[in-house]
Image (tube, rainbow, N blue to C red):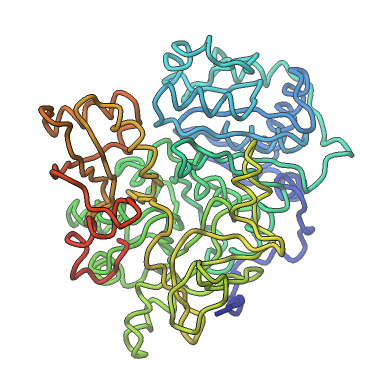
Length: 541
């Protein structure tokens, strides 16, 4: 079955006088010229106007050029959320270069793989992460310049010193909207992360296509709390820049930081469902404070239905919007709009609350039988295929992997299993890839299996996702041991933590004498998952 975009809905702020953007930095330049004194960013007690932010980006553009960055080059950012990451993306983009944003939660050997794969020659790294970089510095084969950035800034901050000593520079004429401006690392089914190359055209198309429902009114502030290494952070931050409204950025997505942002006036945000669960469990004061949000958009992981119902009851005046997307399409491709949340049950369609909504403008969806590659009938499950100007340029240094997911006629094979109802609502029900989504983080089981299989006691291992009412899913390992060998659950978990980021490591481990296999020898993960998912309202939670 094929679906096209849902009807556009109202945009609150009129940006009709703003020129159509072609590069990710175009709207920043526009607002710097037309509303120079308006607030652009605030962060940890500091704030910058649109004119100041634009000047900083122009100076950083000049500084990067002086460090040898030009069209086709790569820089990289490694830190928690910081406006410097956005500035680096915009400045690199103005040079026709890309910012490879690295997940700060990765272990050292994962970080050096991503940095080396990206080819980054300039690395901006947060103070907290400097010890990690120093430990692997001799393994970073391309990095020529390491620039430290501190959370608080100031005259002694090396990043600030770099900007202060640089000459402002405008975008060269030969830079193209088709140039890669972001590389987002998404773990791959081979056990190594893949660099997703996103162009200016991809990111601008996403900002425009996915804009409906995120809209701002005069006086609004956008809370940027999703990690910028996640496409949900780096795509969402562009909405505030597009509409010319202030963005309040938090360094961490913890309760205290979010509460501080709301008290500073932030009233529209995008977060993972796990954050909402934590708020509801934090008592009446927290629930009342979060009631100030006009819009709570959630995605990157499914919302457990009991949690969504509780949230809608707790905040009757808040607009809820669910989004579904992938890094390879620059973020959002479907949305379940606020009115569809509130009317689903009265209209006799309660099942739509667990749907991912309908296609945003500019996105086509097909549901395809993965075996025959033919479209399936309405309501039947198949692989979700997408076609949109948002679609990435390919996986960095991996042409074979790119060819596996992009068809000759321009469709992206998502690897997700879903179905479309008669009105075009998408239900994402399972994943063809063995991906686990825990708290909005994508975790690929082969990556964890690759590590755990190295433990001397482990004969075979399968990593599965099991339901978790807070995080959506949590990681479980099912193992069998070599004859005469054994290990405790904690020993195996600790072993994983030596080699992987903690969020990827199993939280629980089952031991079986033999893992179930089909006649060809493939481990039957569905059989392992079934006892944990039986009776759930949604098969992927």
